[in-house]
Amino acid sequence: MAKNYYDILGVSKTASADEIKSAFRKLAHEHHPDKKSGNEAKFKELNEAYQVLGNSEKRQQYDQFGQTFSGAGSNGGGFGGRAQGGNPFGSAGGYNSGNVNFDFGDLGDLGDVFGNFFGGGARRESVRGRDLETSMTIEFEEAVFGTEKEIELEKQIKCNQCQGTGAASGSKIVNCKTCGGSGRVVRLQQTILGNFQSQSVCPECRGVGKKPEQACSKCGGRGHVHGREKIKVIIPAGISDGQSVKLSGQGEAGEQGQSGDLYIWVKVKSNKNFVRRGDDILSEAHLNLKQAILGDKIKVETVDGPVDLKIPEGTQSQTKFRLKGKGVTHLREHGRGDQIVEVIVDIPKGLSRQQKKILEQADL
Image (tube, rainbow, N blue to C red):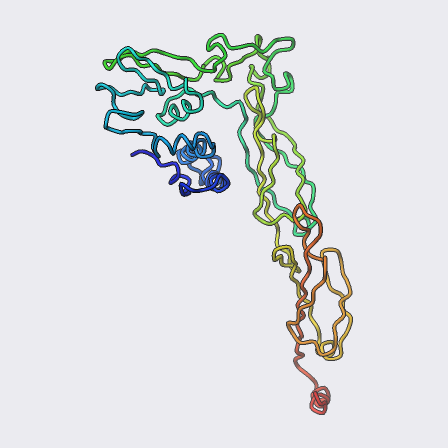
């Protein structure tokens, strides 16, 4: 059954570009193959859908030709019909009928869409390295004020001998002779239905289209090696539990190209004295009966240290006081939230006879 890219991403046909991007990122994180709960097949399907719907031109072409790119279907016309008794598509998105031999690769981006959809297509392998994800746990106060951490990851890192070029010292980067710099090789297959043209990633340059005249002896021309790397991480002030920090270019090193990105999911420890609500901090302060009745000045703990809080006479239990600017730093903005202090009046137990008598005589 043909796929519907909108259904795959769980969005409507009228969804905005931001809505499509948001839906893809959420589902991609959920189904990423590196996660225990990941699903590689689903992840590839999501990526396939986003490659089309996430590109305005490809999306317009997709909407124009139909949700499944099947064109006129079994009517014999359009891109998806059978022409003169034969399947119009080769294994890599080529077309052959009679003396006409047509390759969808000639259509540029549209050719990539058709090639990918029909399971062939020899698009170049991306030279960009993989994105990576990891998690980090920080203290409550570190989330309020921000912090700097250092982590160590095992991943593909840039080769320090060739500096990521893949070339030996003094060697030039030239077009691959096998594919002529296209990153693809074309093969002609003869079948009972006629000649079919197929394309595949060039095995010599692995789809890059270029290769060094002499490969680096350390990385074999790839430009990266497996290793460990220490990375400094700046956690911005005001970050919330469950949010992520993106470090551009700190993912895995790519094939003679740029590195992927690193996403760090932040977990914030709970605090016995404070609870966060938005950018405000909630806390409690306990009063004895005398303090509540007569008023007092008490010490209240804040993330900045203890401060004085004036308690007016006759304060009721569960009264809330606001400490301006003692809350969480606004994320990527100036200023801070407030601290809301709720006072709890502790009713004494086990009073002596004399204490009870005093209370009985008092006109409260």
